[in-house]
Image (cartoon, rainbow, N blue to C red; front, side, top):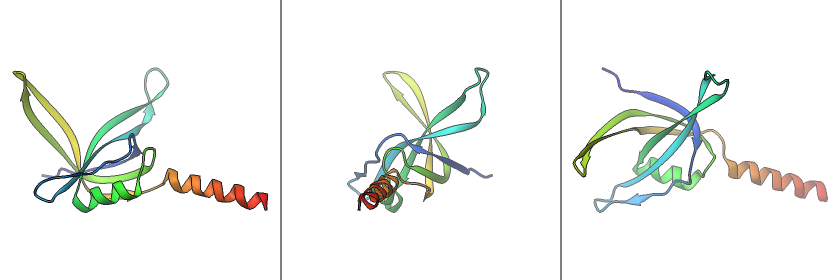
Length: 121
């Protein structure tokens, strides 16, 4: 059996890292992934998919990425069940095995700033 997913989307928020007592690091972010086709209303819809990054991948995404950056994520789907106030809940997320940085809002801003400065000289 194979449990593998590949996503390309934009970070919905700035990633933050959480250090656990056992030394592990984790970052949980939501990825906005556009669908390839239009809905019945003629509009492209977006899926918001929760992703979990561990240890060195969590450190890298927090260091190099921010809200709006385009990333590629390869990982596996994980379903966690729990009970809260007597109600059973199910949470589905993607646990990342790897991440690819496809674009950076920061680098685009830096490029625009450098271009503007060069034109003034």
